[in-house]
Length: 97
Image (cartoon, rainbow, N blue to C red; front, side):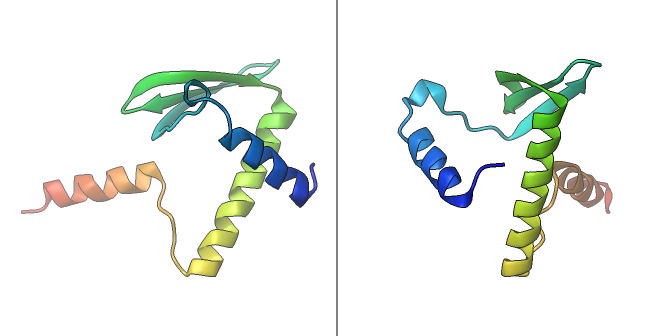
């Protein structure tokens, strides 16, 4: 795993990428095979990017993101809901009289 200053350099270089290489997503689909992991990034339920990677890279990404959110939630005292939690909450509201 990269050192924190390497992460900062990578983020800075990524921010300098042209617009066609930057993606905003608000959904995703994932799949796993014996050889790799596939991630489809969605914007308003439409595919915008396909990522394909190794099991190790995907699990490392998941672990790093979980740690990032755990730290964020601890610092802010706020829980970031998952999309399924938001959907569940909205369906409860529309089903109530």
